[in-house]
Image 1: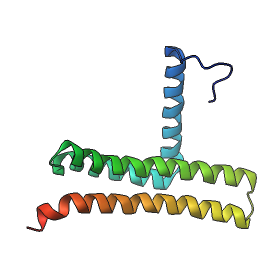
Image 2 (image 1 turned 120 degrees about the vertical axis):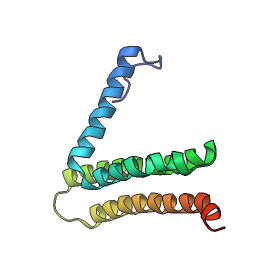
Image 3 (image 1 turned 135 degrees about the vertical axis):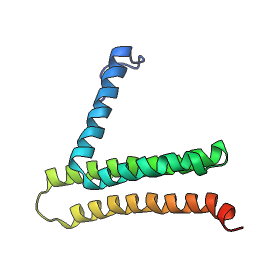
Image 4 (image 1 turned 180 degrees about the vertical axis):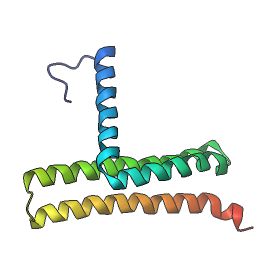
Length: 127
């Protein structure tokens, strides 16, 4: 939700409400988006593996962060799809392009996961 009327910092109540809206968004995505559910399950498996396989804090952060990035981009992609479907429920060329680009963004974050995990683990397991 957008702030209305001022640049003052948020108080604890507003921070709490923002946190609750974020939790609601995560729960909605988990309930309604099969791709988000699958990626969450993969995070549950590979997240701990990142902490076990990473040799340094930086490696762990890169490996775990790349997994979180997939979820964040999936949420944005799902939001785009929801808005596009609301505006234009029938097929439209530009709506299809917007959805395809959102999907491509998710794909690129998955390529990023593979690249980071390979860069971190390849030297360790190929000697």
